[in-house]
Image (cartoon, rainbow, N blue to C red):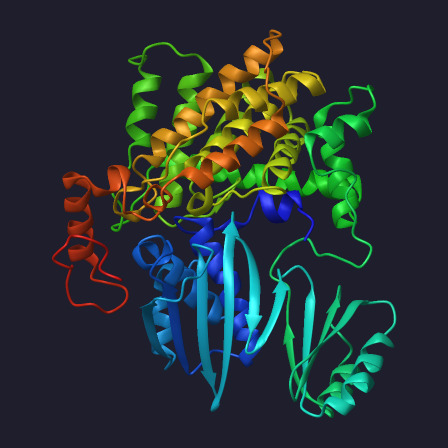
Length: 536
């Protein structure tokens, strides 16, 4: 699937600690709900022991998101924190188990769903930033990303397969692709379309097989003719051809072609997110409350100290730190945030960009342009790699956020294309090797500090690039270096709660205290003796 700024990089709009857990699980759950035709009667969720989810699914919100999706909720639904209770209240029997199956991806969800006496299985992975890939449904291997309407027709009589395929291909104007997978006795006809199929076409297919209609879960859909003008910084420079157009211009052109959008639609979508960010920052500064978190609300005290002149003068950096803290606390209190590029790194980019825009007197359109420039830097990261900390450590989250924010700041300062790319390169270079070790799985400690570091790093690197500092290593090479370093990282320091600060005595004590306060979401009566996650 071709990367979209609004699908993969800046978004989703969501609640919860982690986009890789909460938002991705919710999208997987929505597809599972469509597969079985409603809320399941029984759910079995299986996580591979060698992955990240056995120790983090409860504390980082996988359960919350998955149950919300199976109930048909959206990622920003205010009911999400209570989804586990809600799905059980609906009569659904839930089991969560750890298995030894050797799944290659650390964020693999194995769902077995029973409804009205019929069982279906869905296997999917969370690829980072709320993005997903369904890799199998029942016995059929496939690659499904939730970026189109999917109609799956299971044909019991293989002789009828060609007739079903012809029926689907004859639906004019909206069908993008029809593929046939032959089984030993059955066949699967998969129809991808950018609008729902007409009822008569579905009825005709149902006469020859079992039909499952899965609605898209991403905001920007794909079509048969979806294209992008470039997918790396190197290709961008070739397309620019020495014109030195601002990075945001290329970002708008990219998203127009990727999403089939007009220029004003691209800008307006980003302006809507700007307004959401402002609301979130104001909410965080006013103070947030939530029981299940490590840190108290600290943004109000920082705002007071700043207003009273008690802080050591840092100019805009002091206000950036305040905005970062406010956004992280909104996230941790289950408020509405934008994953940019992830929920764990949701604060660095908007805090830096909104603060510098205010300092420079830039309007919302100029700010949206800068954030689109940041989004394009994110495209160049996640196209060959990932934003998921489970894959790349915090260099994939905080490092990406720093690179994106640096490019946004250069854009706000009317910097050149080359300065934007240089700033992104400098910012990411200094964060290669950063591990992910959230205390008690709550994405607060040391995540707040890492978001502050990413934003401060972005500001410094933007100024360095504007002043003419050489990045030395081209941005694409920096990204591939981070990817290579990620492969050398032990899994314990890639968001598993099994390494780094997460296994200090102080962290284990916090984990026990939080578990005792709220009980275990998977139904376990107490915290395990080894001090680990209660949901194993």
